[in-house]
Image (cartoon, rainbow, N blue to C red; front, top):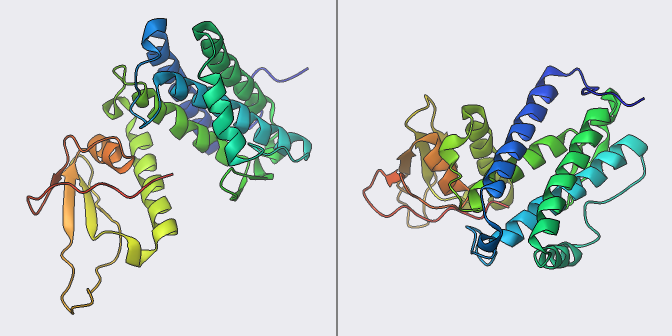
Amino acid sequence: MPARTDRTTDPQLRAGLLLARRGQAYFSRKLNELRNDRLDAPSLVEGWTRRHVVAHVGLNARALTRLTEWAATGVETPMYASPTERDQEIEFAATLPARALRNLSAHAAVHLDVEWRDLPEEAWHAPVRTALGRVVPASETVWMRTREVWVHAVDLDNGGSFADFPPELLDALLADVVGAWRRRLGPDGLPPLVLEPVDREHAVPLAEPRTETVGTAAETVALRGTAADLTRWATGRGAAGVVASDGGAVPAPPRWL
């Protein structure tokens, strides 16, 4: 008989699962507060309505369920057949009747949670491949889902706020974004910025100081704001509350995902 509690005993993983489940509850609450006739309104994701956000979050749960099943069975089941098919699935699901769209979101989330709950301890270490081609342990699916549900709850543009996020989530999100920039852009491609959360004791430099081709050191600008403000900016959701130390305009962040 399947376990009724998480089979894993790893305290760090159990904490991660709790944060993912809290994020799912937060997303579901923001969705449930929306009337059906408001689902067609624009979201905070450029080019997407709220319907697209709901469809994406539901289909993301299905995709991560496939990775979890891959870890459990050893049978390769990719997240998506192709990027094109992923986009087509989102576009189609966004056209579903409101009740069906809500059911997709709710049922897919429950299915993923059950697969996580019943995954044997050793299977969490099994390698799976993300949609971006990275090979990661199955435990990475928990963080992948965590950032999806929390950030897209804000994207519903229905009162969700980065200020509602737990402190440990904000710190992890900011580290995730900066890490993605460093991997993709390299030290020479990063802007000379330092992120200074005013409610934290540490700053986050994006890159080491470097010299421009004209021979003068590039001026490093500090962006200051709360951890919530800086994480919102870093994920591309606006610069409200963020100020630049040189008094200039806050630059747009590099692309995250």
